[in-house]
Length: 160
Image 1 (cartoon, rainbow, N blue to C red):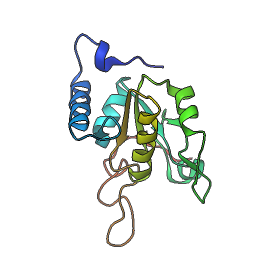
Image 2: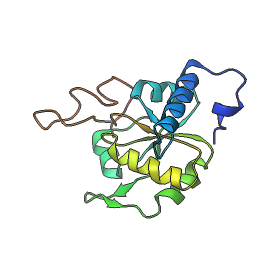
Image 3: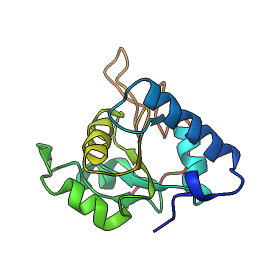
């Protein structure tokens, strides 16, 4: 588990400074969780060891669509019907602890926002949603990945 470097570091990296500003903005906007992080910043934080990246998509999505190498997996919902995982908060805590800086990623940023809300309500102190998700929003042709998302930004990912 990584320690919370938002409050314990003597000097902050530019990525951590940006995250601190996002957290402050979220508090001012009364977001139910600690903020929303753009994909490139999420990668910088994860790659720099300043945050844990947790993919909350189903196992099927990770396998067939791809995932970020080294990311943790705690599904918010399971199976092709996306049945809500009643153990999500307990499983997340077991994998990350409540005080780590945790970035949650899903397909479009919607499920991960719900997951971040649930985690914050359960006492997680630095839990963030990754904006745009792994695949991004649907476009006019009902396809993802053409204008936003982790893959659109050419951030690292692998496919099984």
